[in-house]
Length: 554
Image (cartoon, rainbow, N blue to C red; front, side):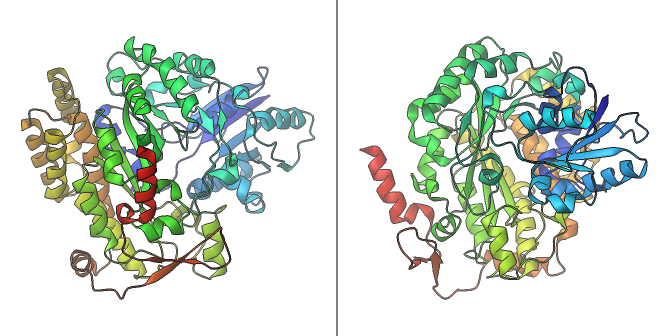
């Protein structure tokens, strides 16, 4: 028996792009894709040894529709489902059996079965081998029931060598699954459970050791991305893991890494020191919003553990850079949210702000609320990618929200204020400046890739000017600059999504109209009466932040 695993593209149209794919940057550095599909690689590793496995990533090579495989296996998150369905339809037209796993098929099983023969629900590490045993006997069910949440020591090491590893920019590692925080916009607890599960540390060390070598040149530009939804799961576990990584980092056996976490990582000074010593280069922090009312409305109370600026300073003092995640479009957001967020980013030296449009994803409380209120525009899942407006906002029009999103990226990455933010960072914040060797290598890669000739004439002019300016800064981190330039290229791509009133809307963002004071009802667990929170109050002005921060210092 033979299985063909296919990792499909998100967009059928090659002119489209997603920021997380880092299209501009990977072209410069000589990669073909930023991230491999870790779920499919893990499912392939869980496949019994007697079954032949072939893997194809559509970003890297063409899909072999004339395959001799007995079964085609696909996986898809929500925004990728339409393309996965199209691929499945084409295989089935040729008489092939197709099975789908992943988040979307688990949440929208009946819909998926219109395009595939089978759906394996939930985490497939244990149910996948059981499904295959039934398939070989001709007894596979249309829907393989969710097998619960397997222990992390049962998760196999991904089958790295089935794909050309040097084609992908990041090494990837998963240390935990699940999340106890029940944020209204997030489906992780629905899919992976509302408690943390931990991979044994010795297994993590084994997994890192098993990373294929990208070669001596690409090793310089191939970091590790820890894909956990919250790397700070259980503090002692995280500390023990970091202590195991420190000697590996000192021996050059673990790449510099990035990890997603919540702001409370900054409460523990020892933890921050361990992150630095283990090789953490970037912490990805879900600020989501600087508004007290918005944070409470999304049930993100963990973000009141300390003032944002204090947490950021503690992280920066270790030489760790921050990617800050922000969402716009909540019912508590007014037209002031765009400039308020940009000013916060600039004042706190956040190198990589990542902006998203509020998207009520299937499997979340938010989706059900918007659906019940008749505020969802459609279920074209390809647009549920956090860069399209798919719902009716409360305090702005759909065009204003879309233009605000474009404005955030333009100002944060493709403008003079963006260059000044980086120059301030290189002057004021502890960081590692590029060596002369790195400068020569990146200059060479820019030349051979032709990157400065991509995008609109306006982008090309900005990119050349900004690159020259960055190289003149004696303490510049030019790798960091290229990441930001990738986002500037994304901002250039977004120009086509601006409305005809973009200039007028941008003027409104700079000088938003006065809004009558309004109190927003917040969910309350202490009684039936909703709590009223004043719109406009910032996280650091909240009594919650002041009380919890004071308590943390005692």
